[in-house]
Amino acid sequence: MKLLQWLLIAVATVIVLLAAYTAYLIHSVDPDVMPEHHGKVAVEFFPGPPSASPKPLVVTFGGAEGRNAWASDRWAGERQAFLDAGYALLTVAYFGAPGTPAALDRIALEGVHGAIVEAGQTPGVDGRCVALVGGSKGGELALLLASRYPDIDAVAAIVPGSAVFVGHTAAFTTSSFSHHGESLPFVPLPWSATGALIAGDKRRVFDLMAADKDAMARAAIPVEQIQGPVFLLSATRDELWDSKGMSDAMIARLDAHGFPHAHAHVAIEGGHVAPTEHLHLVRDFLAAHFLPRVATGCTATTP
Image (cartoon, rainbow, N blue to C red; front, side, top):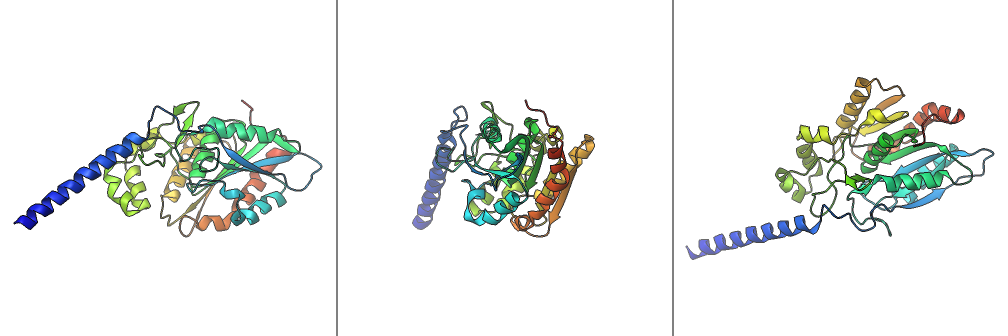
């Protein structure tokens, strides 16, 4: 009997401690105060070989790993492929790098856009012609930027989200992105996902978030507002989130709005990283639908 009492006391103590720790985490992030380095990004610029005429600009974004993934040695071959195709390349770290926000928390779209505009003013770059390429959370970011800034001429999103999701902080109570100081509506993390989160089952966490259809609708990226061609590359067995289903939904949304620009979705067999082995499809799409716009000076409107 005494053993049972001690077990019950121990269980109650653990529950109290967990509740206290959870409360601490929730209050550790102030939703009314933007994080340190809000609006700051770190970039690396790759001009490629000299050219007789200004080059169109391709801007790349990594995912939830943070830092500047596209500037790493791992992506050297893909960078070179874009440079060989005649583009200048800007790789962007929007969090997790020195001088940028530490976490994926209310990243300022205007800060990222400002870096793109600045790169477009570099000698040898045609700042009128800009395409965005982003993977995973970077795909979410690329689509958001293109839907809000009409000077973006094309976007390619790899295993992207179709909505703004909760930021990656200890509290999981804020949006991933903001615009001019206002947090964007986001799909929250429900309490029912706590077990899956602790277990590291990211796909289960996503499925529980996506079950909130009202939140998904409120936080949906208005892809129909993009002012140029859109290419989506997803994974059929994505273990992190339903990139194929969300890409299908975005194509359906574009079609429902009579989207006037080229748009396509290719689903690659495999998991979340499988599409990164097929980035030639991104370059093929840009060659077919972005470079013709470059030849005529691009048609997007500078705000």
